[in-house]
Length: 322
Image 1 (cartoon, rainbow, N blue to C red):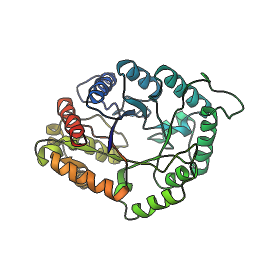
Image 2 (image 1 turned 180 degrees about the vertical axis):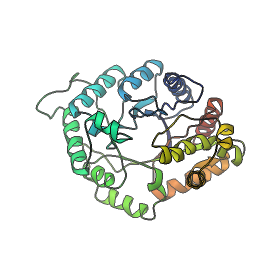
Image 3 (image 1 turned 90 degrees about the horizontal axis):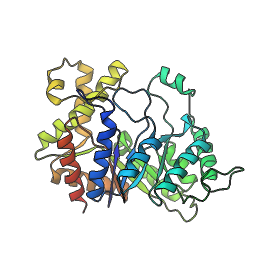
């Protein structure tokens, strides 16, 4: 099974926000050496906890510091952009780093109403998203009325970040899917993936492909791994109360904070569903996910405050799948 990584350029308490971008570059260099298949980056706007708002810009920097690993977006939120501009950006990347560029696509909008207002888009229905994918693909395949330059850049594979209707959108257009989060534990997921595969319409020789996005963290003990998972889960739990997705904090500070009852429930639920534990425990959980989904690839999304511990976790995860 292939192993890839999504790095969200998470900001950390006590570090400048811009340092998160340097941290992403350093992580990309390390995981390339460990044999990861892809290194993907994110698009989030005006979020205090995430420094990456422009995947194409960050990928250009990562490409200059790496040599083999595939680079992509997890993903470009297509409703925030014109398809031609996205095609131009990723064709430029492909021309600079031939044979290494992926383009993952999502339809999420801004995290809050003011951000959505600033982006100029208040909704992104499945039909509009599907139409924009078609327009983007036409630009990338030189079948549109105008040509996205450089017109002779190589092929840029498309992926759909799928929740709900995204599976149908991908199947109808012959595209691979990335699934993660709550959908991985949904009761009807095997049936939905079976429908995706049976209704898949190949495009230029494509075949149904599933990538499972998993927040995986490995430590020497299950308890230590749960502590590694805590900063990310706490940030998400707090965001439900405050409306702000915040920086990663040290676990000791989190434990010392005042927790609302609702936050405690969310943290407990998050810790229960995160793939965090010893190498053997994580291996068993990944095997279960692969068996349930038929995924050909794991996209790790794990993150934590302690960068040294995160680097050790990345290396341990790579060792599992060698």
